[in-house]
Length: 332
Ligand SMILES: C[S@@+](CC[C@H](N)C(=O)[O-])C[C@H]1O[C@@H](n2cnc3c(N)ncnc32)[C@H](O)[C@@H]1O
Image 1 (cartoon, helix red, strand yellow):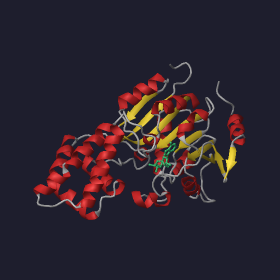
Image 2 (cartoon, helix red, strand yellow; image 1 turned 180 degrees about the horizontal axis):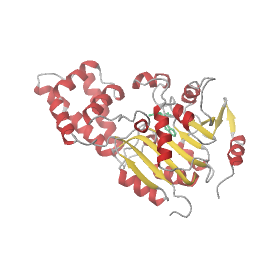
Image 3 (cartoon, helix red, strand yellow; image 1 turned 180 degrees about the vertical axis):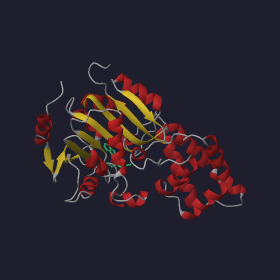
Image 4 (cartoon, protein in one colour; image 1 turned 135 degrees about the vertical axis):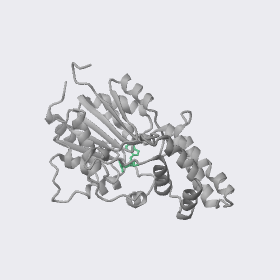
């Protein structure tokens, strides 16, 4: 049975409040400095299109938006801002385990903000997702957060339970294993390519390179305890499809897509493998300018080879969107 609109309000009213936040979980700081997150990734403080694209996808996929939405892992509000502006339902619960991230996101909304959905904020760790009441949410949204969650199957099962029929779990900018493995294979060839060009790897470059390739291996591996790693998993669409199906959710996979691709002017954030690879090494792995320059010059043939394989279609899938929809009652 779908809960009445009042039940969300009643549930919120019963939650513990501490330090000004609704408290669903224990607070946990992010592994990297939260205040520096935007400058690290080179992103603007206010981003509208990501949340707008998310809401347009809800519309085109005919997701029920009559109930509350939940955002998990809001960070600095990259998805939250446009979501709060465009979500047509009555309530949006914005969450993160880090109170600093919650504060940064809450700070984006000035008095003139035009969204109509009511915003609520909670400290929430997705490892506690079983605490959510059954059938409470129409929409659960994440961006670049699923790969931080320890037990992915438990998470998907609990989301399926917390969603209303006709609702959906939308997850964007999640890393795909094969695309990242390809990036790591290309990265491993960097020292050989530089050596062939007579350039010696600096110790700090070797350190950074190893940081990337060992993170890829950690995220691909399935036989180690990932409790203490910040980035934990890479995904395989067919596997997530099977997981969803086991819990009554139907997968739609949008390879190389970003939520913002679905907002005007409808341009693709993903251009080609080489630009994604170079962007990732520069902003996510923080390779220094001198190292990036050498990579641009001496890895050109390897990067061009991959781009040429995808000269008329986007790929390979490195970062993608996973939509898991809960069928309406009677539609199977
Ligand atoms: C890579 S950041 C993405 C932030 C934001 N969604 C964005 O797209 O910019 C990952 C976010 O997931 C949050 N996070 C990490 N582990 C989590 C968990 N177990 N449950 C919920 N959120 C988590 C982090 O605090 C951080 O805000």
